[in-house]
Length: 220
Image (cartoon, rainbow, N blue to C red):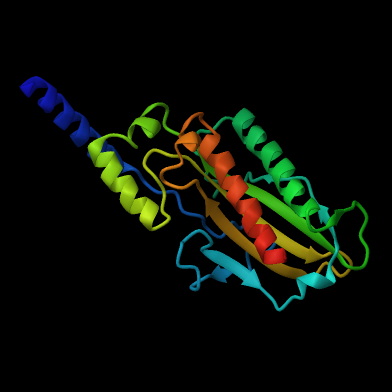
């Protein structure tokens, strides 16, 4: 029994060290995005999910069509993919294209030609972090992990050893090319979303689900 307790204590200690050592990846103003010069820190965002934003007074109800450009995978020096493979980046970009198109179809007619009452939306995938295999799930059940993740869940923060996704959104008037809104955001699943810990890209895709919903909430 003593040995079991000692091993549990060691596991808790190791997990605590891992949690403490996890560096949180934060979005930056990406110079390669056309709107970067317009965006400023968003002090109204207490969640930290949208640290930079540009906004204008827009009556979104005046628009009923949208052009969704192909998702761009950011290649600038400030990208935040770490050592993620090009294959995984392409997988996330494809999922992002599909998921955001599905969301937009619930509110807009998706078109290819510029015209009146039409938005042009550009999505730029700028970074992503994969889940830590096995440990991401186990940390939800370890004593130390449960405490930490409980705190994070209460504050809508990131869970331990869980992935995330970072991207930029730029929205233009399709006819005038005027920038209406732009922001960069980091999205991740709820700290106790166990399903999002299974699979390397599960948390990043769950973050894209949240991001698509957030965009539609803005445009409705």
